[in-house]
Image (cartoon, rainbow, N blue to C red; front, side, top):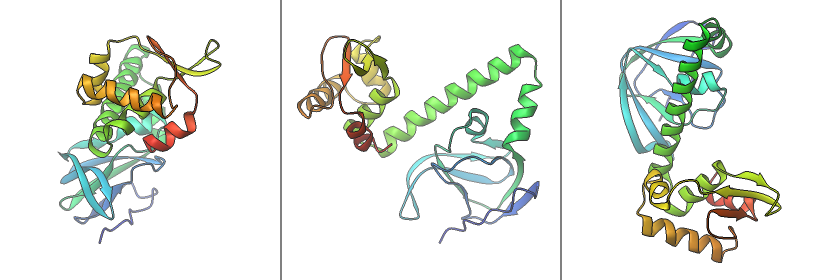
Length: 208
């Protein structure tokens, strides 16, 4: 059974045993965790087990710092594979330190954080979701208000082959999924603009 009891934020450092849950996917970030020593498994958990493995990191390593910097919830689950020594920094202190950087350095760090977050989200989506759910999530992420369709729409600025590659599926599979979504009236239109007449149904399909 996983140990889910991390030390309180008031403690700046701690040692935790192997099997301790360090991050819970979807939780708000109240602290940024720095692994000083030890190995941590990243992935997606189901029924208390690491069902989909994304990778293993070893200290020294900042654990999901991008989520704290961007004010977003954790995108992965993280479990200590060995005994781990940790340092904690509150999100407010972490962000304040970044804000003190020169503007160019701050912009670079934020760009890197956004890129890392996007790549991790895509990796998690490929691990834990089928092609339909991945496509629905991609459509929601790229949706914008559109006066022509009278609601949300997605403008396909890339070739479908490139979009399929981002989703980790074959171009033929991407075309098949779009056809199924259209048959279920979850998308409308054609060409370069796809309307989203039922965003809530897409969210349920995507699991977001």
